[in-house]
Amino acid sequence: MSKGTLISYVQTNKASVTPYMAAKFAAEITNGVSFLHSLGLIHRDLKGLNVLLTEDLVCKVIDFG
Image 1 (tube, rainbow, N blue to C red):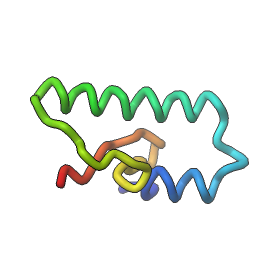
Image 2: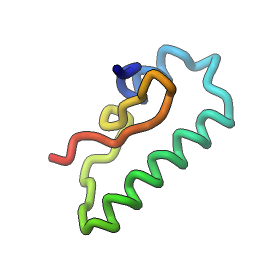
Image 3: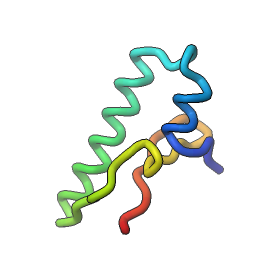
Image 4: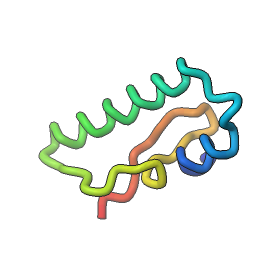
């Protein structure tokens, strides 16, 4: 199950997103994109709508076009 997209989560929970959480989200997205690049894939539309959050608030890059 997912919490929805990253952008909707941040917009809904602005006050509770700490700098630590923002850095964690950024690191998870960076790791995901790095993995894609290691496979020779390029995500041409990376944005908050194309990142899902799991119930445990782990970022998952989606929508590969």
